[in-house]
Image (cartoon, rainbow, N blue to C red; front, side, top):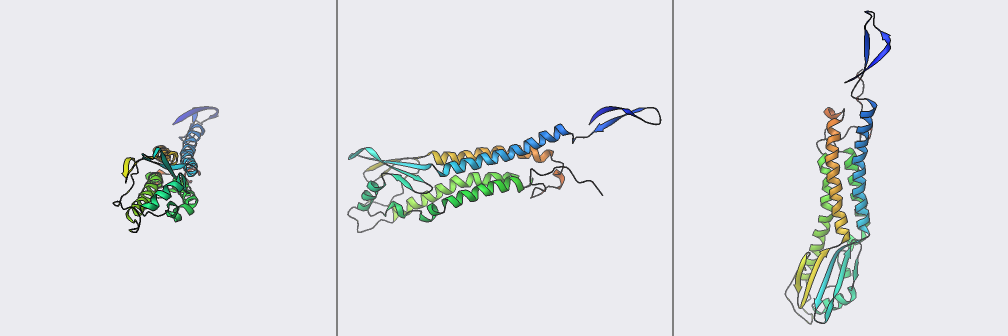
Length: 245
């Protein structure tokens, strides 16, 4: 508690009394408000990385063989594929693999909607979850890159295990490596995540920081005792308790 002297107020007993300023003084409220907006800023930074990731490649694969000493390159983004797609499709035809454009058509068509949904979910969870559910804000940060990896693995496994038996060349079923070195027939492969994947993963760092800062905000909130699964003030709303009537 902070006390300030009020020289113009004198009690009947001739003693001067000190005016009292509670813990809800303006500097403290301003500091607490800044922390709350800091949480929102970290959530928006995470959303920014997701939007940026949408426009970047997420995964790169290079295939090496004696007839291709410089390698054939394939890049995968949320909306399609790039690199030596035509040349790789021609080689895949000889082993009975389908065209790359046939993979993940649904996912590529709705990728923008998916990123938008994740962005809205992150912001809504940041503002609306209470003390009991505040840590769940990091879930979209985990899910976004993991869903991409799971989906990529599914399509690679599907294409590599559904080879046309009438193809000119026959090789054992395979699943291309998602990370590091591998082999497909006579081709050596090297796969690595690209900028889009790392941008999406960095969103998890921002969300983890938001959870830590939000824990401090919730701890010091005047409504902490009444907070449960949902934030009663939507995080950035008025924090004062209502006066008792």
